[in-house]
Length: 154
Image (cartoon, rainbow, N blue to C red; front, side):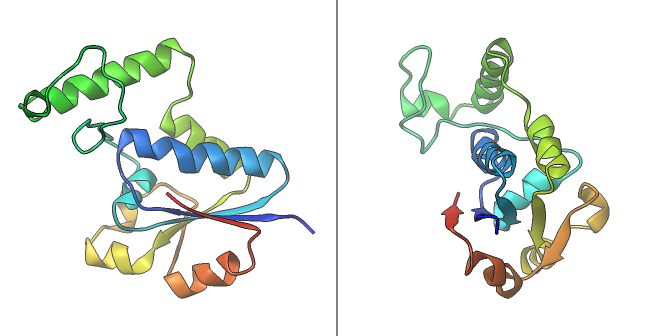
């Protein structure tokens, strides 16, 4: 019987998009049965058109190329600049894009579940999401998570 990994993805930024997909695809490659439950801002990771940004505000652990006071980080355009810098650095290091990792998860039969309550709350149309996802409530996800060997909240 395969081990199970349950992941709850709640963040919708570029830097927080990587952990659920990296962990899920790795676990699937190791033979785990994997489900990711996307809720609240994590739903952004299931959209066809992702416009994921990264911000250093509220993230003091983010390495900056030069020391920058918080006040400067809040200036218009800084988030776009930081996102561009992060994407450029990732590409130069040969890191797969979020889209590529998400596709890898789908190919590895990772079940991607959109939280139905949150979809309804934010009035997101199903046509905005990628193909092949499921819609379910927390209770349905807990059936799997309650039996999982590992459960992660990201």
